[in-house]
Length: 516
Image 1 (cartoon, helix red, strand yellow):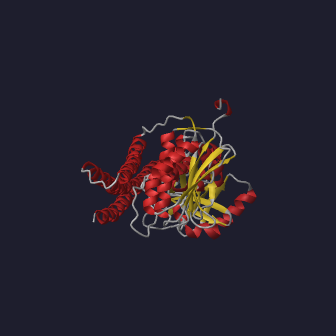
Image 2 (tube, rainbow, N blue to C red):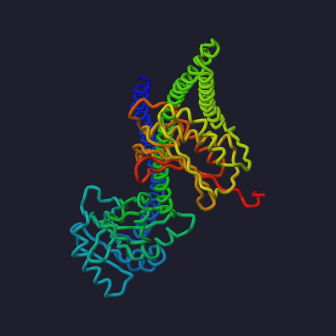
């Protein structure tokens, strides 16, 4: 029931964490995008104001030249074109290349130009054929200063015109032709000088062809344009911050970083939740194993205690048929006491191992003696189970540094494991020399160890697959592993070629200088 409740907690907690992290990531990313858009809007508004001011400077320059023309030219005296305006043209109106007097019907009454004869004849031809029809002559608002900007071929023509009433009561238009090439090459560079502290400017036409200045396409969203609404219709002034590329890169990196931050937070939260659930599950499983250990140990203790008490009561009541039977009962009590001692040693050693206090006193000793002692202590158990144990010890075993009690405990645990899982088959205990180490191996002739259990048999509380009610605490082989490591060796397990399992450990031989 508890396990099902815990798993239900998994199903609720993990989706809740994922949903919460997803919501957090969504709002964090949206907030980042909104801040970036607000920043772009603020910069755009500032640049729009700069572009608007630039357009106003250009149009103010053109209108100033227009007013100078209208001041110098008298529509009632056409001679003022040559005698008054033309001498002052290069100084007062340098962008104006020609001035014309046109009546309401579109007839050119008089005109003057600062260009050479060929150029001004070409202009007059273009004016009459292409430009004059586009002028709004005779409108109700004829006295207002107006401009017309047209592309004819590859040339750009800017005209300023205004109507005046003559003494004869007729409307006469003064038309000023501005050289846009002069504006691009002379005026714009002065107005939009390139400095490190100023934005970058350019002027483009309706097709986004650059008329003046650098290409600002790389500035992206930070390019702001403002049109020439009164004079150079169809053209617009564009402005971009000098560090536009860096701003875009910074925005991209910030959005990416802030997008990665919730993802990283999500990953951390999810990993934390998974780790918490794993740790909680592991703790729950460990508590179950400890409870199972207590139950198994209690059961293991009960049997030898019951036997000792039974035979002790029989001895105390003098209900012994013969002296031979008396010695037999005492022998049983001693063997059960050995078994009880072995089990208690296992629990105490495991408790010391869990608390990190397990220590061993290594001295040069006789390995065969320690193993024989363990075999004798286990003899009663093997006889009860009907299992025959054979000891095979090599004659040339080198001296070793051991804790005899610990080695005996390890051997008893190996024998106990073989008897429990060997299916009452004969057990072989072998001591052999291999290079500079000594192997202690116990083999049974049972079903062997499943492949997926070979790497788990030395884990604490692990108990292999069982076909029947096998007793055990699950700590015996983990103690074998710990004892082997404390002696500088390693525990190992494998399946024998002819069937059965071989479980053992090796310890290093004592250094030669310790042999004396």
